[in-house]
Image 1 (cartoon, one colour):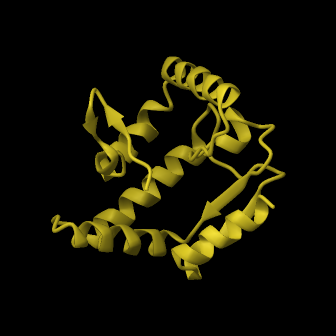
Image 2: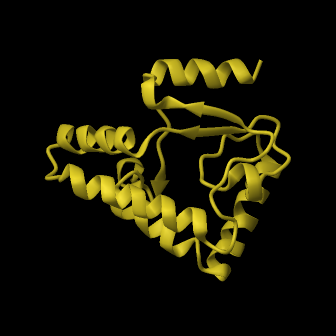
Length: 145
């Protein structure tokens, strides 16, 4: 599994916290923040072969990427996955609040003025609502061959 370190500290699990996702959604609507991140992401992709995960990678960050996947699932499914993940970590969580947060983030990201969330015309749609992670991985790997 990929690990992310910041100043020598492993922050991998913190990057997937709900608060971080919501903060990313809000801060990405700020033009100066978005411009800086766009520059960093594009420079990284020029220097190395990368797999990027994000809500505007295929439409805005790397519009000429070799492989683009628009991975989605229903709000209910994503909320249940998140609920189970948090529950498994022993964290207090409320399914309805998680569902509402996901729905609000989707709406905010789809309607933002700069680089809204949408499927790139040349991206392959994978709806993972009825798929397990192994099937999703296999489907994505198949696109690279």
